[in-house]
Amino acid sequence: MEDTEKLLTVITSNDKKEFKDFIDEMHPVDVAILLDSLEDEELLRFHDMSEDEQMAEFLEQANESFQTRFLMLLNFEAVIKLFSFMSNDDKADILGNLPIRMRKDLLKMMKQSDTIKLEELLGYDEKSAGGIMTTEYIALRGDLTALEALMKVKQIGPKTEVIETIFVLNEKKELVGTADLRDILTAPEEQNLYDIMDENLISVHPDEDQEEVARLVSKYDLKAIPVVNNKRALLGIVTVDDIIDVIVEEQTEDILHMGGVSSEERVDSTLGTSIRKRLPWLFINLATAFMASFTVGLFEDVIVQVVALAAAMPIVAGMGGNAGTQTLSVVIRSIALGEVELKKNWKLVFKEIALGIVNGAATGIVTGLILYLKYGNPYLGLIIFAAMIGNLVIAGFFGFLIPLLLKVAGIDPALASAIFLTTATDVFGFFLFLGLAKSFLGFLV
Image (cartoon, rainbow, N blue to C red):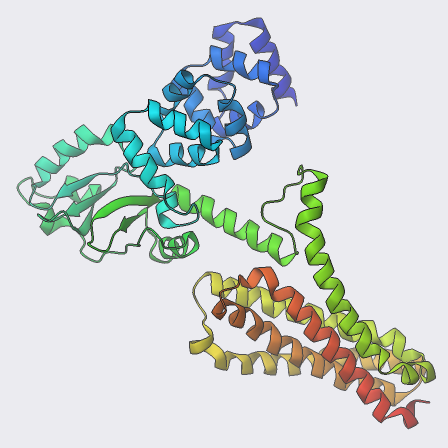
């Protein structure tokens, strides 16, 4: 709050030296956050006092809604000027969020070479490798010597996003390897790039999902991953800073999905948006709740005779849900990292079953003992002990298989797994516990 007030004071004073000193002391990300709190008139005043290159940097760091809001305040000439200081992938991301008419008009005003590249980037799905790649990289022929390559790097470097990784092409312009700038610097001047490069290439196609791209970058510890077409022609690269954004985005999306909330919703979304995004999932949860209620209703006569069962039922359902969520979290994370597949790893379900038996027995002993001490009936303790083991086995079984089956079906495991799991643990858990109670009713009454 203090920084916002100070910024407003500096803008109002129109003292450019004081303004520059204030801005220079802050990181561009922090400035971008401050700008989001300013009114339109204040934003325009800030823009007038800033250098275009600096303003472009702030805009790159800002959130999507602010980028759109700010650019719609400017005339097209001012927007084009800011774009001239940005990389193509950042420009494409911003253009993709603008109104279609404004986007088309801006593209018409740009250089033809820039327009072609931007239209190509805009043509890819925003969550694919093509959608997050940049076309600003250094690609050199493999027959260049180390000295010639360094001269090229010096010439091209200032215009590229990544300089430490050089992509090596053959005479057909196919990507054949990568060379680290450090290796080029330390190699003999007459040695060519073919001899310096690493031929062990990790690349992706432009339609590859961004989550898979992030997994590869993380697995192989890459600074950048090339995006190639079917002819091995280099289309662009995905840099590690974009991968970090993808990881944060995907994790946020998964967490929201597991809570039955759309990734498009924000805390400041309108009431209507929040209702549309949440209410359908609440109705689905309501339907599953009725299934559990129906199961309990089958044993009304038993519950009426043994009131203690009503107090014990939430324990069985709650422990089953908690155990299932543990398994679900581990499996969904493993799916995201590419560590587990149904076809290859289905036998791991037996480990979850064994885990359910052990954990169910441990928690069942404690629960059974407490219920015995409270109600003085050892059979009630034995029933809850057996039901706890059974429901935790059910939780482990379904917690492992549900997300894998959804993945095979092409459904996001994080989106629907929790609903199916809760239904399974509640319905089977209640049926098992009350079914055992009905079988031993003579010992409980």
